[in-house]
Image (cartoon, rainbow, N blue to C red):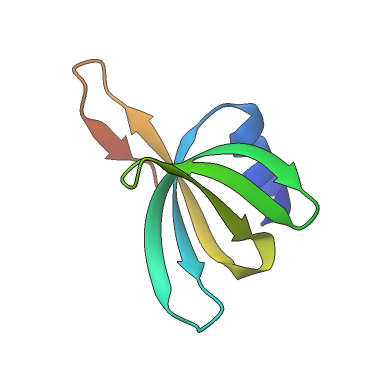
Length: 77
């Protein structure tokens, strides 16, 4: 998963993360990956308009999002 996250970060992709928090609650987040800090990913959460930190080990899935020319977003996969 870490390699996938690093690749998407280098490519500047907007991604959708499936993430389990420390209590096991699963959420789906649309983020722009900013940097890797040890075992944490620092990202910009698009919907919350805030910087967030995610532990790599808790990322369940990472799906790139493709932006269409007319402004709508489409999931890849």
